[in-house]
Length: 118
Image (tube, rainbow, N blue to C red):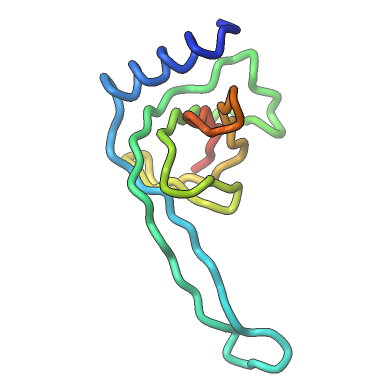
């Protein structure tokens, strides 16, 4: 399915029918450094999203970058652009984002088709 509009419709339909509530967790450390022995202050902010979890297609698994235990995660957009340092908190546990899979045909992110790891 190469048509961006069709891909977006299919993703929205899957998220509406099969999506589960999840959160994107972003942890930021401020302060710290050579002159601050405390190590700084760590703050985690969570953003509500809907996700659909699925197995990775076998043809995408290379054993190194994408492993058999990784998950495909369709994700709605949050209040911020997601980054590889964010984590997904969902029914499968805390997931590390391996590949964002940002779908943004006109430059604005419509959804994410990520690869994530437990």
